[in-house]
Figure (spheres, rainbow, N blue to C red):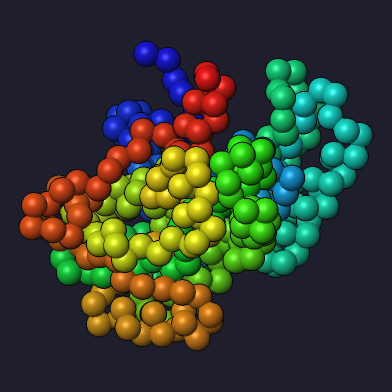
Length: 340
């Protein structure tokens, strides 16, 4: 069996991570399925939060994109994104002004979030047909504020802030324009879909900060590759609990539905930066929803936790499992297109 584009299967990744030795007691949270970042005790009641994430899908805003997806991971741990490093790999034959454009995007995105660009590496790399930016983000938090999944209990409420597949919709509108037009998607829908990358955008930093200001979340997670469905399965794995989810409560933007219908894709499995999953105590759910609403961020309850195996089931008496996507719908579409 050969590897296909996208994340490794969750079970295979879990087996690999289980072999990682744990030696340093200062590592409060290390690698694990559904863990957005590592948490390291640096003394004085403070912790360092660290993450890294590459941007490999083609986008004309790859620098900005790399900053935001890494900042999201820090914010989901209750930390403040503070320092960023970027490894920028460029394809031979790229336009001379590509490095300048990417660096402008990096610095602009860092400035918007109050992040310091502190280093990295840039080179032209043989074998690439598109630029890749791999980011490393460092953040900080007090030990008491960091969100690591402690205190989870049955009956906790699973909240979804923002809309799903904003990222995937925008990327498909950019990369599959001709196909969408050929399949009858109106030009104005495609144009609006492209703009989703900017408005509402893919950052969940403000949403995560709002959640933390309103209540003490049990755990937070931002959906990326594999969409909201994969993120829910990862969240269940990180929590070590069953999540019962109401799929009908998950909002899908009209643009997303139009693009997915035209390309025969499932929005639940489409790359989804720009949404935030937060698990909170039942008594806190209303306060968090109200705080996000005041910040003009849509939020709704989509499920609840139960004691049981780490799995996601639909809100029905039959306990039907939520679909598992072997790979992101974005990657599947382009793989299927390439193979005819």
